[in-house]
Length: 257
Image 1 (cartoon, rainbow, N blue to C red):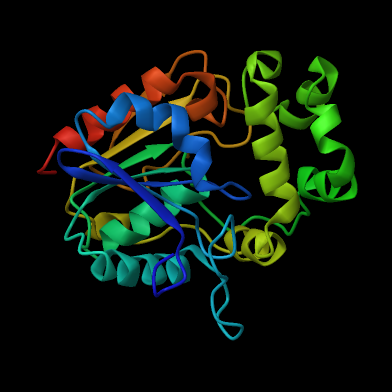
Image 2 (image 1 turned 180 degrees about the vertical axis):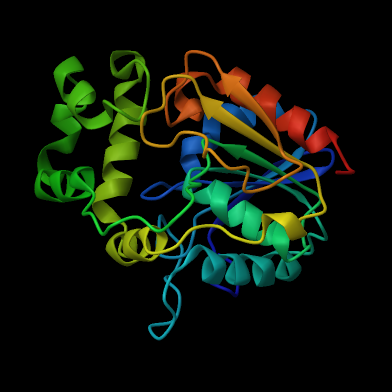
């Protein structure tokens, strides 16, 4: 745990890359991807504030992606990472772009980043409520194919292929995050702006089967390169860890926009 309250893991060798999970996630969602990266990158996985083992932001701070990015920028300085590469999934992709807008990272790779062109109406996240209600039964439910399908349908391409351990980890993270509701409200009440001020390389990778987030009609980061991840839904880290790792290696190999 860092002094800024951020829980993290650090492994591997090479140019540093920081991995940011999405809403309701935790750093362990990257574990299979890290195994493909650690020989070529120093990898830092973090729990966002109020998720996993990280402390929430201060009570008087609304947990917008911009506010979370400010906390992460302090965290990067605290652990001695100067301008690392950063990759993020969903909300983590938005936060990665906020870090790039502050010019504190070397590149951004967004995996199904949470980008839309205007604020969205408030909407409770059904999976969060269901997971909280069923929390005592989650271990048993995630051992069944039907339970995994119910929990993961819409966020992974093939729920039945996800191991019971990974499914339980994802469902438990949704159930236990103290900052979930506030972060969900803050995220949906805004949208990313300022992409034209980003000067570092940006690679945006969209899941072919993702129905939660699709590429916006208008380029929010004018110079970004966009690609499609075949066979992947909203969590490509679970659908295809090797492809996710190759995408991050590609994105973090570029040093100029």
